[in-house]
Length: 275
Image (cartoon, rainbow, N blue to C red; front, side, top):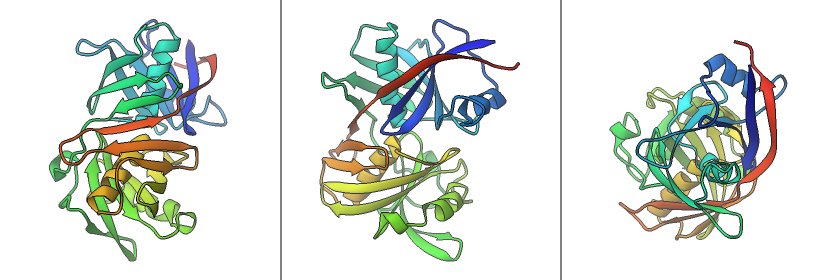
């Protein structure tokens, strides 16, 4: 079958975006893996699906490159609002969307960037989920090393550690071990944060089901929240990722996290899928 799609990215975190409002989309995990494959398919970190919603303007579904559906993707959320606006699915520049992780608000700014209300971070271990506490810092045994992590959910689970030098941080090695650590029953996104100053960090994230990506929106939110809770950062914070810059603001416990960053359409296409 022929499937129309758009290729987009948010700070280098790239997506295949599908309109499930005007075309029927019911993909198997194998078909999603094919679309995400950078050699045989289109290539992406995540696949995003726009669907109708009974409780919001749209339903926003996210599938990682391994075919698994996940709760939230911040960079994808920014691309989502640009996609529905460019495709004429809505004239609104500000929308609410339903995700597996809850409702979020998205706004297309006049300068082309997108601001997302990501909701309040969650620190309850059972809701992350995490086998332990969500104290400001908790020790985690990772191979032969013990690392201090901050655990929270931004609609999806995150474990953030502070590193002295991001360029030499063991992102691939430790990231893979942390992602599938037994204390995270639904796996976790592993963040590595270098604090440059109180309003500026560098960040790399090993994402659940995708490996290291050029940027991770929810990871940026989680890192800033963790840094503020550790008294290392003051809101707002500029987050430098390998793919670009994000701005994250958080007012403290019970308050939503606000993320502003780019959303870029690369090209549109149609691809034939095997049944």
